[in-house]
Length: 118
Image 1 (spheres, one colour):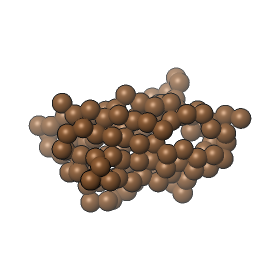
Image 2: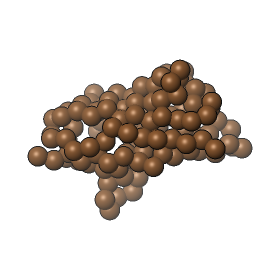
Image 3: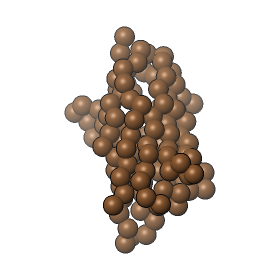
């Protein structure tokens, strides 16, 4: 069973930065696309960013230029560097490992709270 553990969330002022980490157990991390999602109170979970196994990146339009997704396959860990944070970025952030084939399972972490407030 694969486990994903997020860390790095917290309270930050507008304009500040945070770096989220997602550590995966097992040996599947390197071959799977990893994504970050977020869910604000009263809203549906939304896509934030993803990075494929070969380094392709994609971002939610509103975070482009502010957030950077990366991964270290040797450490089975993914990251989300968040700069110029805005109150609208406040949410619980989740990492996800996508299935490669229909016979596999997506994996989600437990989430880490990010609060942007003065």
